[in-house]
Length: 179
Image 1: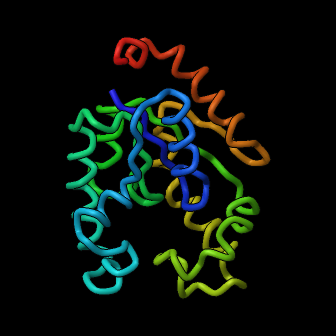
Image 2: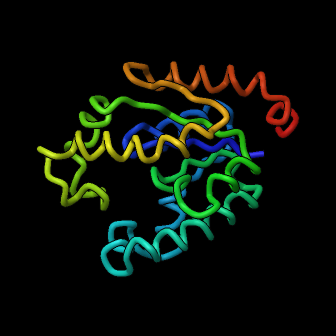
């Protein structure tokens, strides 16, 4: 059984994933980093050179690969991963999933200086970023809300979120018997 962190870009999936892995002394992998390693190219380059459709196809393949490996029990996925193909079903069948929910203002503050490195918002423009994220969050809510657990992360420290995840894992008998 895996622990999978999902949510919108900038919500802290990778940061929290690394912290919970460190706390539990388990290995962590970020799906986007895994894709970059396998494809020998950044996500931005893949989007630019091969397009989003290609990216979403390989993303699904690599997600399944990670869900079947035994090396990385803690995984963070890209913001769009749960929203394409059968990815959310794959996550649900193979993990205890956590939706790290952040408000638009929190996400804006985190992403406004990272727009150049985020393919989906590179061309949006700072003046349109909040509206774009609000629309995107609305469109993706159906998928994010299918996670087993939801944690609101606004104004919370990394340590607080890690403690909340650990408390929820202690209640999950499948997770307890896994490690």
